[in-house]
Image (spheres, rainbow, N blue to C red):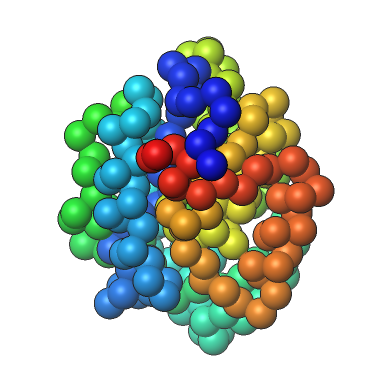
Length: 212
Ligand code: VGL
Ligand code: ZN
C-alpha cells in the first residue's frame, strides 16, 4: 500500500545511529543491525533531504557500565532517573563510532552528533535523556520547513523510539519505517515502544509503502 501523498520536499529521512558498534561484531551489537543498510540505501534516493545522527560518547561516559564497575545492561539511578548501562560503544574518534561502511552517506545534509556530554546520555536526536537539554535539531528542522520526519535505523526500541516521540512533541509528524529498523530487545522494550508510539501518534510504516 503506497503512502497516500507520496514523498514531498517538506519530508525528511532521519537515519538514526547506523554505526559499526551497533552492527554484528560491534561493541553493542544489535541482532541483524546491518540489515537496515541496504534498505536505507534504497530509501535514501527517494528523499530530497536526509539527516543522520551519530552516537558520539567521550570515553568514561556515564552510560558505560565500565565507568561504574557495573554489569552491562544493569540500571543506575542518575540525576535524571534510571539509566541503562551499556558496554562501551561509539567512543568519539574510534572505529566503532564510524557509520557502517556500506551506508550511502553522500547526500546527507546534516550529521547530528549526540551523547557527547560526559554526564548525560542522549537516546533522542532532539533532547538528551534529562529531557531538558536540547540538541537544537527541532529548531533546525523547523527553520528549514520540514513537516514529516521519516525515521529509520538503530535501535527501534531506544534511539529511534525516543527520537520519534520527541519529533511528535516538537510538532512534527513522525513515521517510523519499521522494517528499516532493528531492536536491542531488552525485556519489554519493544512492546513498550509500540505502546508509546500508539499513545503519542507516531505512525509505523513499511518501506514498500515508499518504494513501490
Ligand atoms: C543507542 C543504546 C545506547 C541507540 C545508543 O542508538 O539506540 N542505544 N546508545
Ligand atoms: Zn550510546
